[in-house]
Length: 230
Image 1 (cartoon, rainbow, N blue to C red):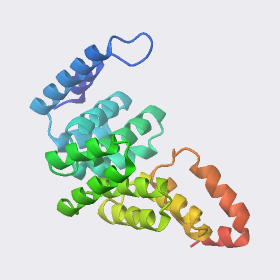
Image 2 (cartoon, rainbow, N blue to C red):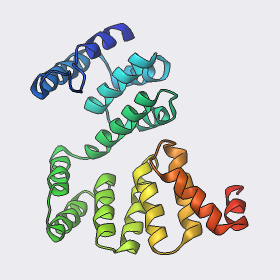
Image 3 (cartoon, helix red, strand yellow):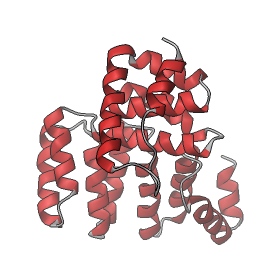
Image 4 (cartoon, helix red, strand yellow):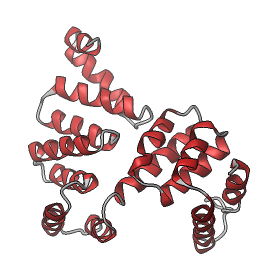
């Protein structure tokens, strides 16, 4: 299956922005794109297009994988975080989040979406605990609980959940950066520096991380620069 047909389907989706068509029209176009792709492309084919296509083909493949892909696509998608094209790299990040949020059984995925929308933190925490009881391999559920723990200033609990995420999903740049933030709050600056460097290796466009790394290196002095050589 050539990339020209995939790009043709992709180009039929109206763009976002002030001149774009209504959100409903765009949503319908994305659903049509999803249907066309599901009928004609396998995940393996999309990953090959992702690796070998031009910018338009890579963006189309990323959108398709975000709609239909599995966790098996993570390595190929994560490689695009380093793409020279900024839009492609940003789409890769968005695609990974889509994959991570639907990495478990459909009912568990829906429950996670419901829980992250809750404003009551205690209710959300109870729900995440229950979700992880029945879905102990659901990395994104641990990540969302880590975020909740961080907001509750339970930094050790948050760090433990970030580490669990990375055991299950080593491409999770959000959990890696979150781990760095936990270590910062715990005043473990060398550990924070190591975590932030690892996050930037996963996703070199993470906002603010490069600046944080430089600040930690300056604060730690020679010790921080020596760690960078290990």
